[in-house]
Length: 207
Image (cartoon, rainbow, N blue to C red; front, top):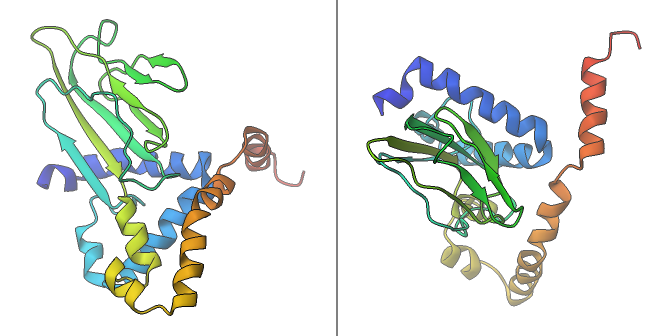
């Protein structure tokens, strides 16, 4: 944890949150809003944040020394959420360690120090093996889906939340749960909108 809290690690983590905000701004704001509501409920949790400027609340470190992820989707994450995966170690990225995105039919060269942000509950992903004598580690930043559910239920567990509802309210809650994927889909940003937003940012003042 001391290594994670080190200034260099914090600085390295900051661009990932910034990139998340640039590419999927509405989803990024949703993460920030949920984080803010959680900290308002229990302010001392702020001290446990892995990186001060990160909107991701959770962190998983795979120490390897030859970390290989098998094909999977992170069904425990928010269905429309994103995570940041960073590869570390010493291996030849030309012969191994590639990240595979099955539904997109992509195999991506992924050298040490690289980071990818992806909707990990939607896309089956994994990485290829590395050569003998080489080392690979990984760090993943994410927010578990249970955190979103806890906050949206008034910072209480499922049992307590549903017990507090009337029959009509439980029916309405079920309808909202069933349509949550559509809410998330509407938060995704299409490329033309991203290009327009970028053009406004880089345009000279006065134009």
